[in-house]
Length: 139
Image 1 (cartoon, rainbow, N blue to C red):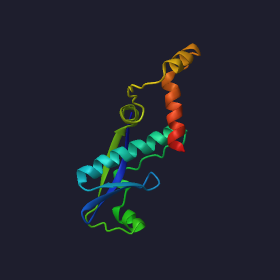
Image 2 (cartoon, one colour):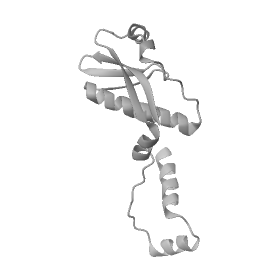
Image 3 (cartoon, rainbow, N blue to C red):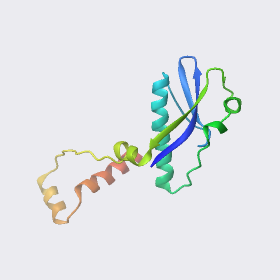
């Protein structure tokens, strides 16, 4: 399902800042307009995916006509001169499959005795490695 939210793009020096007023002022940016748009899609997908995964309420999207660049710029203490509003859309489920949930195959080497002992206990190697890696990266 497609999710569509208005985003405010502000040109600042040689970069673009992007803000989603409907999503707690979620922000990202890029060096070019194209990069800023790509980052906005990625940012939107990640934020909505996290809300869905955690069971949090997903805010309703405003209409592009309801976004006042002057008000947003004032809130951010930004210059609205070269700013614009653009709708950013993403299929969160498809994006998550491609970027967050996609599995990759890894080849590893363990001692033969450890392999035999784990197989005898019907240990799922992939699940065990995933759990161990999560513990390791969180510490």
